[in-house]
Length: 373
Image (cartoon, rainbow, N blue to C red; front, side):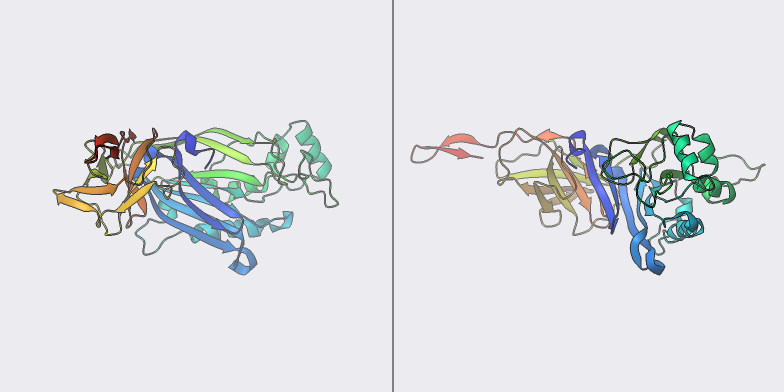
């Protein structure tokens, strides 16, 4: 958050299961169009009871599209390939949210799936693999990569795409070095750390039926690389950078916050907010005042419950006051965010603004100058 918040990126959600952690960040202008629908953990270790293996998922709606993001840790060792594939299927099956009015995960517009998948390189011996890596001859190793083999035979796994493995295998290294495992076990290098994605399967329409225009939703991979400079782990980290282009299914926020005419002569800032007709309001909705550069949704300077601080409500326009007497005089820029309790998401955000100087000098009855709002 220290690194990303100066870039206008805000932590939207996270889920953790032991050592498996998933965080989602977004630029603040996208917040009203990101709805966190569900977070989920699926343990698969120790007969499904232990979370050292398994997957975590954050399901969200992005401009009206369903997106699932999954981080996983699958079973290790060369001989456990069938178990890895079984856990992959089990994690996928457990991401269906009955009773939450969310489509089956295979009907989501995008699934991003990554993590320590632990797939290994079959057949070739340690010496051959290391020599191939040394000479950057990866094409022979790709053919024996267990995940690549599984994708050729499994119809569902085949629907997941991956970028080309143009970087050396990312496991296993001696800690604090770039040397592959020199311990007694001398693990054979492998591409254990992977990033996959799957776009929604297109329905097979009747060949004679008129073709309806489909919503525009396109994902393209910009880079897929490892980072050899990091050495605190026996794995090297892998990153993928994507371009996502879409035609929004939702083009207006559920709440519009109006920062103009905010100020009164008292210690209050009056905020006008208009709501869409179908907005499911709650007595527990709240408005937060944030400095630009906020780290996460709880990083507010001040907040108010909308119902408790309401001044007026007419024609879906609500006026709410915020006490700013405790806010120090500052030249920082601020934002207002409206948080929906029913939707567990920010549904409205103002443009950045500055709080004008709040104090001016006025003579008191004794003739002494006193700071006044």
